[in-house]
Length: 371
Length: 264
Ligand SMILES: Nc1ncnc2c1ncn2[C@@H]1O[C@H](COP(=O)(O)OP(=O)(O)OP(=O)(O)O)[C@@H](O)[C@H]1O
Ligand SMILES: [Mg+2]
Image 1 (cartoon, rainbow over the protein chains, first blue to last red):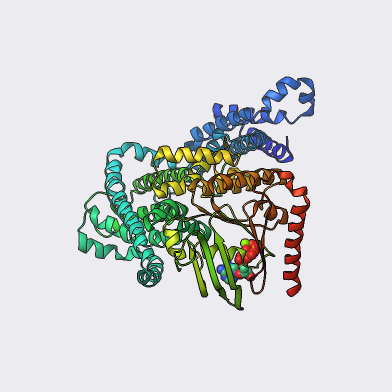
Image 2: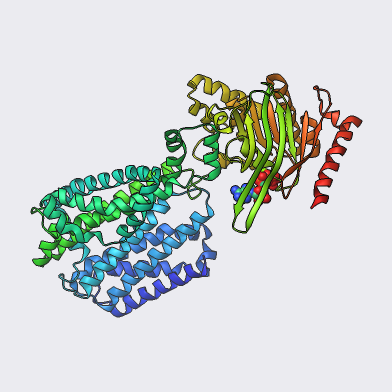
């Protein structure tokens, strides 16, 4: 056990004692069990025990035990939240969190010793952090009685997600599956094609590239009302905003990518008397892929923001942005947060998918090489 | 560019000059170079670093344009010769594409030439075997050592199979044993195919062992100080390097190099 681990364990035990001493009569049975478990976890610090039953001791030292204590305590706190939060309950919440931290510390230490890549660890640790974020969000909003208009607890948002699935799905379809996907595909696709044209033509490169750099620095979202005038209220105007937002970042990146192949690699293809298209497809586009993926990832975020904000300026009565702006007006903040959760999930899922694809396509790039 | 010289002249340079304009003045990379190379010759270029060996090969390959003088490759301009795929070039660095396996790197020029898949595969197998990289065809360049990468790039040039080979220090990064082995291989290949080979090296024994003609160069400005025709027999076992005749030629090359240095 490292010093940090001992410290975490000891601090959790102190919290357990505090909870037991101050709340012995008032605590729910579940909380009492949790406090007892936390204190039992503290017994592991005693050297006497380690000497008496070394076999048993090494088993209870495992991170799984900390995880168990942590989840039992967290569950007991969540169940007791609505009865008001006494100091003793806070102490158990903190003890739960300390044991969670301890479990992660132990797991990471084990993982660092073992060879190879462990998916459970690399996926589990961020999930675990997410859980604790939600836990304290829930505990603080309910425990401190924060008005739901300011910040609803996650449980309320979760309930909304379940009860309004149909509306959320319709909004998702309108904003993401129609506007975002169409705008993103058209914007990125046309930008790559134009970049190839511009790259070939010196006049275009000198003229268009500085303009491209200038425009990609502008807050393009301001054109959203104009696009509504041009393309109507439906998703087409949102897609148009996205096309404008994503076009220049992709064009600028593709252009730098097209000049990424080294001079010697170009010379090599020249010695083979390779034609323009051959060197484009066999050398320059593959070498440009890291740049293109960079823009694809930036644009996936831009596109979602663009679609949502563009809907603030007029839309049929469906869509994530539309719902956010109207439900805010009605003080239905749980619905607003549910829409934000849907958007966040869609955004991270597409970003994650792009990152995976990037790894597959640019596996040769020094930042991804294996072996 | 004249057809008047015998049709077996592969390279003919006359009063060839090349200056590089740099920020701190003009670099005379090549000064008044006169050289004629006949078909089937094995010509080594030797000289101190920066004397213009690479630059001269690049002029032949149409990767650099001379400032003055004339150069003909197979009686054509370098540009025409390049488009006719008259030569294979081994660069001083491997220049392998990192997203292609070794096999697919070797077949890159063959794809560009539009050869059939079967033909590509046959040539890849033959040349990868020649440079001793069997079993590494499926690896990516960054998974191999520097010397193995250089051998892959040699295999790629051999697979291209042009009548003229331009090789810029192809064995510079290799250990002595592999180098000896590849020297023998290149010599055998040259004897068998009758290719014309221009070969840059810093090693005097390598130059003498391989060449029918050794061009000694000196720097600032880059020019030819001596052209030594070797009269060693065509059949050259490795231990020919111990014979008096061999050592005599090596001595003359060394003196030529010294002279170039003394001029500075
Ligand atoms: N693109 C360039 N721009 C400016 N100067 C150059 C360029 N290429 C080569 N030179 C200069 O021309 C001279 C000859 O260079 P070159 O590469 O031909 O030398 P080298 O004989 O091949 O040397 P090494 O044995 O080190 O490879 C050097 O002084 C070099 O600095
Ligand atoms: Mg050189």
